[in-house]
Length: 116
Image 1 (tube, one colour):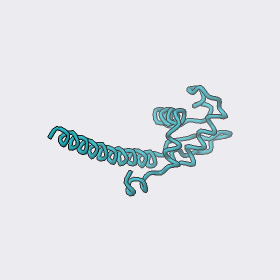
Image 2 (cartoon, one colour):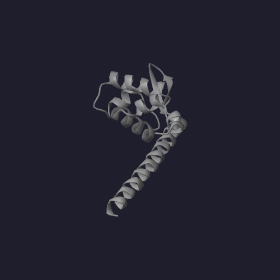
Image 3 (cartoon, rainbow, N blue to C red):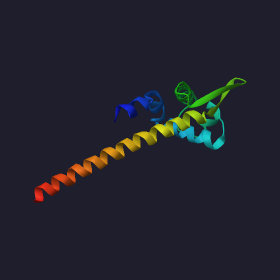
Image 4 (cartoon, helix red, strand yellow):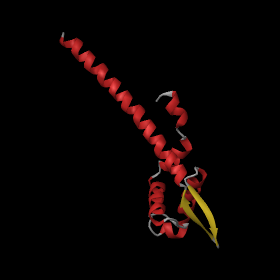
């Protein structure tokens, strides 16, 4: 990865997104608009306490924002931070596409040299 791309990548953000349960939670929050640890735990194969811990990771990464609602917190996806993650992914994808094209050109050149 080029230095420019590497500097744009937020490792904490991608660590948070890297977990399948947290990705599912983000999906649920995007579909429902908001949710609590209790409502999210109904759709996931983990306990409410585990959901709360996962929400904490997502919150620290800035992917969700909590609003107090009685004894619980209501969580919503921070769309600006999610857009930032999408932009980072596109940037990393472009960098890898360029690398793969370079590798292909080198392999083709080697193959042509071997045929001569």
